[in-house]
Image: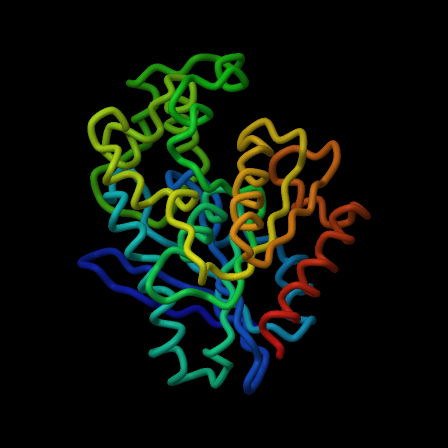
Length: 288
C-alpha cells in the first residue's frame, strides 16, 4: 500500500515522497527518478518494479525533487540530502523500518544523484545506478550530441516555452524540449548548474562523483545497456573501473543490445534476470 507524504516544504513548493512500507525492521530503498534534473516525476517508476522490490521485502521511498533551471543545481542536491535525512529522522515517526540499512537507487539523472550520495557525509549502505553517470564534465555532456543533433533542432525560444519562473517538482514531458536544446548545443552543464566548466571547474568537480570517490564509498551496482543513445554505456564502465581499482565492492551488469530506459520493458527476460541480481545485491548489503 502506498502512502504519500511531504518530506520538505519550501515556500509554495511541497516536495513529496511515496512510501511503500513493508513492515518492522525492513531495509529501505530510496528511489530517485530520471529526467536530466529538468523533467520527470516520481510517478515514472513502473508499478512492476515497485511490486518486485517490495515483494522482495524492501520498504521503498520514491521521491520527487525540485527541478532545473527554476531551482539552482546545489539546491537540487540539497533536496536529495534532505530526503535521506527525512527517512532517517522524521519518517520513523510513522514507519519503523530499518534506518541503518538504506540503499539509494536511481535511473539516468537519478542514477547520477544516487552515485553522488556516495560522496556525501552520510553514505547509504549500497547504491544502484540504472544507466546513470558519474562524470557530468565529460564531452558527452559538454559538447553537442551527435544523436540529438539528428533530431529536429530546438531553438532557445522553443526550449524555454515550458520552463517557468516558480520552483516545481512536476516535470511534465513537454519540458523535454529544454533538454533537447541543451544536448544539441552541448550546454547542459551551463544551463542546469549555472556554472561554466571553463571557469568554474573546481566547484563543478565537487559534484562529479568520479572525482570524489573515497575508500568508504558504498558498494555499487551498475546496470547499463551497451547501445544507450542518451547516456553512454562508458559512463557506467568508467565508474565501475574506478571503484574496482580502489577496492570498492562493485558490479557492472551489461544489458546487451539495450538502449536507455531498458528496465521499463520489465517482461524482457534480460530485465527479469537483471532485477534478480539487483535484489541479490541489495540483500547482500542490507540484510546482514
